Image 1 (cartoon, rainbow, N blue to C red):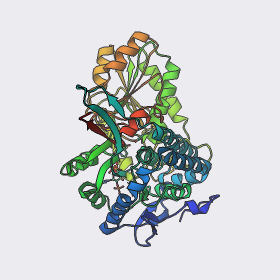
Image 2 (image 1 turned 45 degrees about the horizontal axis):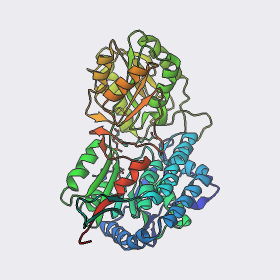
Image 3 (image 1 turned 60 degrees about the vertical axis):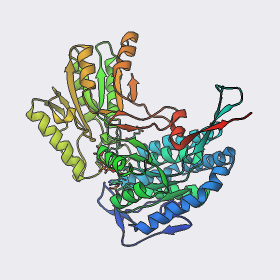
Image 4 (image 1 turned 180 degrees about the vertical axis):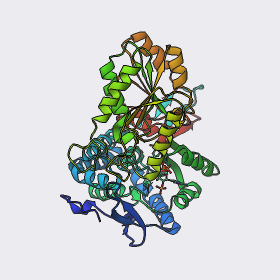
Length: 484
Ligand SMILES: NC(=O)C1=CN([C@@H]2O[C@H](COP(=O)(O)OP(=O)(O)OC[C@H]3O[C@@H](n4cnc5c(N)ncnc54)[C@H](OP(=O)(O)O)[C@@H]3O)[C@@H](O)[C@H]2O)C=CC1
Ligand SMILES: O=C(O)CCCC(=O)O
């Protein structure tokens, strides 16, 4: 067992939060530390009846929660935010133990995403309706915004803490309860959030966490008539499945799915800044984010130099356990991730790419992998069309802006894109032409609570964060007042 030395050991729990109960099980799902392969905890594999209990509890709790003045809901959300920030060091240890990322990065995820609770606590008070000028004198057209109903969230392993606060913040702010089903590889961060939610005064039934067989829980969420809304972050394949399963009830869905982000460096860019931006956009979380640069397009006049500099910076990253001081890159989540990275590298090398740095499993063994840079990559390679989701940076050279834009848009995905330029005209022209929900200009870091996060094309539906994020949890009601 991985032993953690927490200031507050009660934050580490293997129990699910359902209605008024904390449910543990010795025979459930093992959570493994990817750095050591040790078991960290066993969480329940809940039966369908308990998932239904959670939906029933959420339904029962919703009227009172929705009826509370927004100011009261906001105060509770704010308290939850404060507790997360106060306990960020402990939460980071829990996150690193189940996911592997360096402690500093875990803490960064926790604090940056707790900010979604703070943001939506503020937004809760600003859910305005409308009075629309009516087409006749005897009528008034009023628009109200009301909470959508019982919400559920299915979250991934790459941001075990942050993907939850992004969804729970707007749901609770809007007056909805939410039930979270975290990834089986990383449920402990979700459970620790439930401990703090209770401490913050979130009422019973309003924030619940369930663990168990994904397909069973997903089916129940999609078919239970009392679930109004599903918010999912994960693979496009599972997103499509949820969309189909939920179609019978016409449930509302927010989907944050796969990406295949292009990162373009134009000939007028500051090369060193672009290398620095690419390091963040590519290697953060060991390349395991849906907004990670997947393909790096560099103008032919700079491409080789850029690849060499990127290779040097990538080789300087310290690979090791997330708990070790100075570690930049932890292990990958599992062996399947290692094998996918290897298959993308070998396919690229066979088709003419050259290895600049890295390229193989790390000497530390397990799922550690060397940060890798390839030069001479092209659109023919698998890495141009599939999300690698690992620390592989392929550099492709281009001649014209049109060529770069066309290659960048040559994908069914459209979540994030990045480009570096110092030319104002090009900034607008390219920014408008890229088919992505998020475009970073001269930066490799784009997510924050004030901005809308979400994708075009098969990268998803809806937006998280910003003033748009709360709309996903609200229905618009038009009140037609006549006979005046
Ligand atoms: N957009 C993003 O941020 C993410 C994208 N991905 C992409 O997906 C690839 C595969 O990763 P993977 O972890 O398998 O992603 P999945 O989409 O399988 O997992 C994400 C979440 O969905 C759950 N899930 C899986 N199947 C179902 C189902 N039938 N019904 C309901 N929930 C379900 C998982 O549960 P359980 O863990 O119990 O299986 C997990 O909680 C990655 O390599 C990457 O390309 C992955 C994670 C995040
Ligand atoms: O990978 C994701 O699903 C979200 C990325 C969030 C971030 O970039 O902080």
